[in-house]
Image 1 (cartoon, helix red, strand yellow):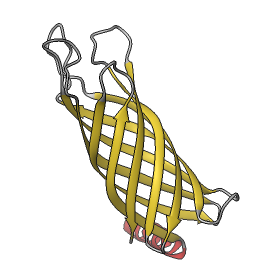
Image 2 (spheres, helix red, strand yellow):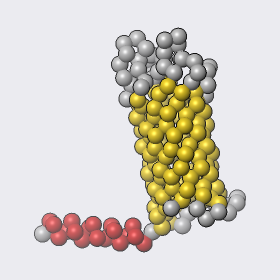
Image 3 (cartoon, rainbow, N blue to C red):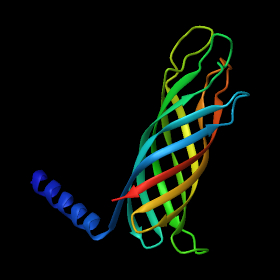
Length: 175
């Protein structure tokens, strides 16, 4: 009997999702970190999928891989590059100012690699992330997005987390 209920629930969910508009986009990203005196530039790619639950509200997931690098270390023997893997929940909504213009809030967790505490060398796993994006869909299958936000990493061995303030640009193809 439990299997029957599970099957009915899954079929109901599949029918409900199928009735909605599903969009997937993927593309390269370029980011600039403003948290440090020297510039850290990030490059990578991200993928986002969203389901439009109402005509003016989309919910989705965003993930990707970003590699940040600098020409100078944080300290003389410190980090000059690190990786970030964001996994974010997305709320997307059209803005009535211009057709195909939208706003988007994304929040979740960013996993960090190649980031270590300076004093003891322990790895830093990552931290909470929030981005606001302003995007525009054009030419049927293309999307350009400007985003601003932060990931919370502790790279300077301070007791509190350090915010990685980023400004980014993404050009995506919509499938």
